[in-house]
Length: 112
Length: 114
Image 1: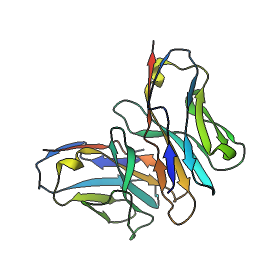
Image 2: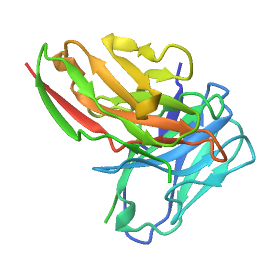
Image 3: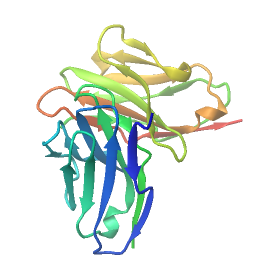
């Protein structure tokens, strides 16, 4: 039972480089989310997708783009990485908006 | 604006001590409430949740939380902590209304000393 799978687990980027964080869930959930976790700031929502084909901005969307490729997959793209994007990124999914979220293992991203 | 406050950012307890972590939110409407735990190096896991009904909610590993609507609070409790409870604890609130997104508190780091 994989749940929510994120790749990669670790990544180091140079400023200005781009990359895509992948997320897939096998629970047939409708809603998917991308959060970033920073010390002293908790989890902040970057983007979310309430259903396949829809995406919406969260609290801190600047510098990121997302794609809900299908019901299973929700990717997060950094077009031009900046040191301020150094963080731990978590993908999550939930059956619907009003239910608990299941989290992936996280991606630790460092931008130098 | 809707917000979630966790007042204790870092708590240190000895084993067998009782635990209470505070969580308050600012919103007068209907809410769904959650507590998540993050063990060192791991992802967040659900401890317990409240949607409706009995305001005293029991979760996994002996944790419980009480929803007090008049105080806009959802405090997490455990009568006797263990070293294995060392983790970071996040309160989360789903506010009703236009945006069906969960808002997390900044977290409380709990360190249990053997």
